[in-house]
Image (cartoon, rainbow, N blue to C red; front, side):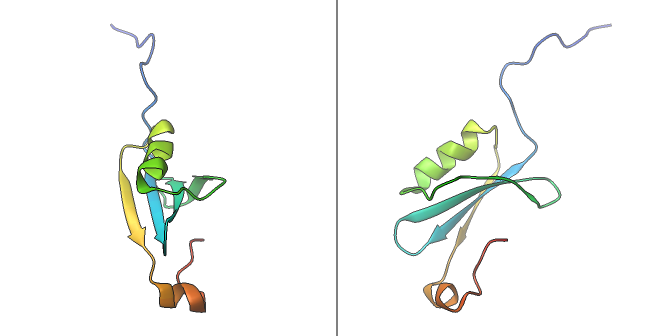
Amino acid sequence: MFEKLMSFGSKSENTGVIWSLEGDHYLAFEMSPEGEIVERADHAFKSLALAKEWLESHGVETISLRQSNAYFEMVGQDTVH
């Protein structure tokens, strides 16, 4: 009976991941429900708030934070694929 004529806001079913590296570097990834990277920010953010803002601007509502360990960074075992 009723038909959706317009949408206010663009919500996404994708999730966000913010990868916290040692120091003040945060990488932001938009992930599909299947766990694949949909989009990656083209630069590292200097704060968690800026990385979160970037994901929210892409319609992402669920965001998780992953912290990196300096040792694993050095040996290359803590990478995002």
